[in-house]
Amino acid sequence: MAAGETMSADGKDPKQDHHHDHDHDAEEKGLALRVKTLETLLVEKGLVDPAALDRFVEEYETRIGPKNGARVVARAWTDPAFKQRLLTDATAAIRELGLSGLQGENMVAVENTERVHNVIVCTLCSCYPWPVLGLPPVWYKSAAYRSRVVKEPRGVLQEFGLEIPPGTEVRVWDSSAEIRYMVLPRRPAGTDNLSEAALAALVTRDGMVGTAAV
Amino acid sequence: MDGIHDMGGMDGFGRVEREANEPVFHADWERRMLALSLAVPFAVPYSDDHLRREIERIPPADYLRSSYYEKWLIALESLMKERGIIPGGTVTLPVTPGAPIEAEAVADAIKGGFPTRRDDKEATARFVVGARVRARNIHPKHHTRLPRYVRGHEGVIHTDLGVFGFPDWNSEGKGHKPQHCYTVRFSQQILWGREAPAGDSLYVDLWEDYLEPA
Image (cartoon, rainbow over all chains, first blue to last red):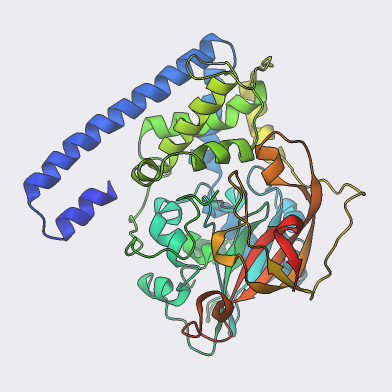
């Protein structure tokens, strides 16, 4: 757990860490048992089918992830008409690539340019555009990110290794309602000869959250 | 409610800690928890607003200690108790469950999502793009999508997103209250004072009931 790492990073007694890890293991076991109990109860009552649960997991662990969003970005970089559609009606444009669904029913894409840098967050929970980016990483759901990026975006981005020049406007998008956002990052220089697939391979999850350049 | 979940602008959570090559799930129980949360509503209906209400009711100290999927577990257990599906607690929303989602239907269900935009004709827009508005200084005791850090501040309507049900009502089971939701742009200096860089802005999606003319 992150707390354990922080403790050792702060030079606390390693015994403390050890002790903490034991508590953590016990906690994990307790949680695993509670989830199992809930699942068992719901299966016994005929309200969930374990095979359907397996399918949900499989979809989100193997099929739905940032590779999907990378396809959208690469298409926008290579097809100006698609890019225009993406910026006008992202939900429809993304659907053209066969992508849609849960936590992406209403999509908006925001474009990074020389003058504007966009970054997305959900301060109230951890809303995230699942069809294009998959499930959110732990840091996106963390108190540190949610609390700070709305107030000191440049400082947070600096911690990610991204220095935003003073002349570039920073726009933070707090997805507090039903819209899910993705950032259309700037196309890197020197990529004119790359194919759409090669471009897609360059696009990262953080680039589409706005916490990294591509 | 003015709970711990409403984190935008808080200090003290430290740096954003990231994990290199983070896996989609960190434990098998997390896989089952995600799947349960997505599968159960097919047989026992509940909306994101209900789930979020339960997450927001977790006492602050527990909220901060709990991981993302642990919060989902706590919330799903509460929802199932109040619906009389699992034992414990008080049954306040008795339901007759439907059929579980079948494994073969999962991929399509994910792709279809749960569209919540409902452009009910009776909901006419009170604000136009470019209008100056103020986020109301209200402090509901229930679920709301009006983050604390914008309350009382002036912004500009950036986009009319269309008509959606009002989450404050959905979460309380008060019925569908359709109204326009808008992206509102706030200057970072308005929100955080002169120390914020001039020109930087924050965009947040707010329902009409959260806004008044400025």
